[in-house]
Length: 168
Image (tube, rainbow, N blue to C red):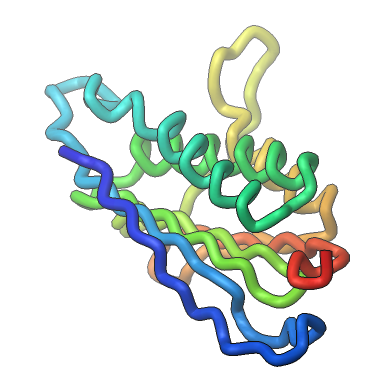
């Protein structure tokens, strides 16, 4: 049950640093889900993955020269989406793909589930139920958009970055 992380570089050869029309880089992480004991929402071995994936991706975002505020926001929304993928997805694999493209960051989380995630309304005192609300807020706050694949297996968001990192 290990982390399978690999860089996929799609960087075009640039003669001019102002050419920001092609994807700069992409990172994909896949994790094989541990078997869940009966009655448990998440296997104990899988509780570490949201934090590990968040730290790994945030290190990549810093390398891509994203603003600190964007790194923090992406880290938070990624934690929420990956936590939900492990808690509610039913496929054997949880996957994350982060792509730096022109003036946007594209994030997709795949959980193999056959149903779309549902936003719950958490009551005062509830310890859970706010994850998708947090994700919606963070994406909207940055002028981005959020979508769920037709088959319900992945959720994606696009976050505008303002000045493209290739011009920084």
